[in-house]
Structures are given as C-alpha cells and as structure tokens.
Length: 232
Image 1 (cartoon, helix red, strand yellow):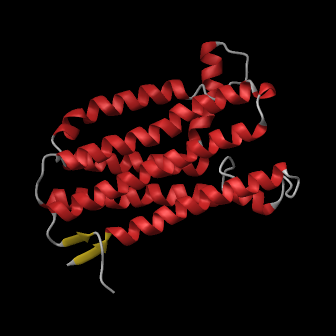
Image 2 (tube, rainbow, N blue to C red; image 1 turned 90 degrees about the vertical axis):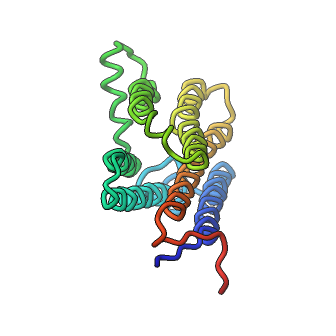
C-alpha cells in the first residue's frame, strides 16, 4: 500500500508558495530602494515576472506533479476499464502543455499573431488572452459532462482551483496589461503587487488541484492511502 500524508505535502507546497511570494516582494522593494540592481542575479532569480528562474521552476514542477497524478489516475482507470479513462489522459496531456507553456511562455508568442490578425499597432501584452479564453471555453464544453460525473467534493475543488488559476492567468493578466499601458500614472510598486497577486493565484490554484487529485486517489483506489496527518 502506498501511504501519502496530505498534510505534509500541503505544508511543504504552502511554505514554498509563501516563501516565493515573500522573496519576490523583498527583492522588488530592495530594487525600488536602490539596494538591488535589475540585472543582479538574485533579483532575476526571485522576480516572479521573469522567466527561467526559481518561481518559474516551481510552477513548472507543480504542473508536472499534476501530470503525474493525472497519469496515475488514467492508468488505474484503464485497469478498471473505466469509460472515462481517455478524459483523464486528456487532462494529463493538457497539464503537460501548461507545464511546457509555464517553462517557455508559449502563450506570449501569440501576441504578434493577434496584433496582425486584429490589425493593432500598439504593443499590447495581453492579446493572447483572446485565444486563451476561447481555449478555456472549449475545454469547459468538452469536459462538462465528465465534471458532472465526479464526486461533489472533487468537482467543487476543481472548480475552485480553476477559478483561482484562471483569475491569475487571465483575469490579472488583463489587469497587468492595462496597468503597463497606463504605467505613467501608477506607482511602480502597484504593478509589482498586481503581478505578485497574479502569480500567487496561479500557484494556489495548482495547489488546490493537487489536493483534489490526491483526495480522489485516496477515495477511489484502496491501494493508495491518503491521510491528513502522519504520526512520526
């Protein structure tokens, strides 16, 4: 039997998210206080608005954890000859794509294409949101019946995690884009806080989704024991 302590996993990931958020705000304040340079290694490593750094690596790995858990569920469902096996496989592939996108920012490469299609001259940073919303809508339609067949607790956790993640990935992305466009009238720290909230919501959304998958595994597969606390 595989035994997993949900409490320990949650504590570890929660402290990681808290630490990354505090570290980001610390280096941002240090930069505005002229204690750090924008090009300094520690600033680039901890700034959540940069790529290929510690926050990006954390989010990429967290999404890969989702891929592994979804893949495990798909394998176990296949052994049960469950008719929804392909839906679990599809979710694993979706989160693999999200992990790759997190690592290399594929979505931002849609901005030039959207500017060309919409004949927009301005360098708007959030045009990728348009195909992003269409993509999310398509996934919601494809998976709606699948979601209605899940246990209520699992379904509610997925909805909650999706709301958090999409609020950050799409909602606050729009806010960030508008703030950048009108940055002349804003204190730079306002933009820093907006971006920090955006990334925090995304990380919390993935954390809740991991929780939902672990609980589902524990409730549906006797060989896997998921518990909230573990006696040392």
